[in-house]
Length: 474
Image 1 (cartoon, rainbow, N blue to C red):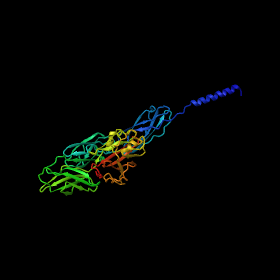
Image 2: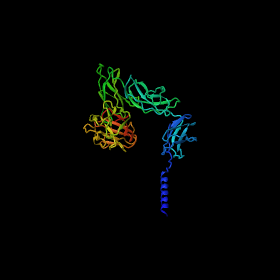
Image 3: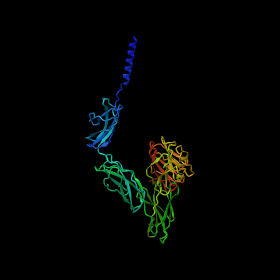
Image 4: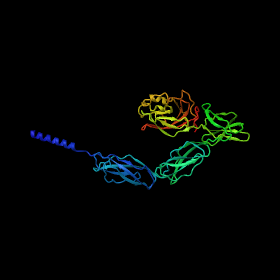
């Protein structure tokens, strides 16, 4: 081959290679995403937003299958990555699965989108949130409680309260998820469970909400001739010692005193014994309740105005942060005066006396996979407790699982050092855990879930205000 022919052949090969390298293959668009309502009524116009990105930046068209036998033609072209809206009306109630495809201007089609589930029909409101309001009240005084309910179709709702001694009529219509407030005045002392439910304009009703337990006391105005200064203490961990002062203003000494017990959650009051002493020991058989003392005279009886209770104080559901290297608001503690629960900053040594437990995965960060409830004295040595100061005031509290099959109203386990531990793993939900504090109080801890993404555990508790008493009926 001549030099010229060899040169021409080489040039041809280079041209061929360069031409081949410059040819770009067209890529299909990504499978579309679908956003829109997951529920609706028959005959409603439902709107859905589609979006697909083309790797080459080409404009895209969409085709939608509505799951009821209907589908669209290819839409007009829209820019890559731009939203495109399509609407549809379902004529009947049912469950439908929407899918979509995209194609670019060169007719390259995407894969089929993920199915989007749509349910049409009539929907009642969701159960309202547990009512919010005071948990300790006095008779004869008006108090307010509030709640809100979400309607799946965002319809307005009417809310009804059950007060434990009666049920209101449904209130006026309010927007979905709007706060509704109601007022109640209790005339008799006792323990009441408040709940709410919602109804929409079509008369569809929600289930009842979770209950809020409210303790109602009588204002402390002693009657002439009545026992006073009633106080409760633990005789044993399951028996109650009631003490009182004798009437100072009757002019006569009572013949005897009768002790009356009203079990929590009931309106039944029973005489549990009488005595001529200023104390009485009662075995409530693992029940909690209110105690009153009546002074018996020759021709009359005068009951105490005070009616102290052994019912535990329920705390609201709180998302407790995992310790996670900061300790800010990670400490959970009960007020010994009123039993109310609150979160405290564990980076402040001054809060050591008021923290009763914290949530931890015993590692830096909050990735888990397991969370535990732990005694506060462990926090300064916890791998996630780098910000927790050393202090001799951190409580040494202990924890024990309730027996399998136990409920929130069962008595807590008797304290045995072999059973109560420094920490317990939250390994199933909901889980019930008994707490015995360093200063001798019992409490019930209920963990309903953990959130490893945000590093929190949902906790609610019941605290027994009588030191040493482990009854938990509420």
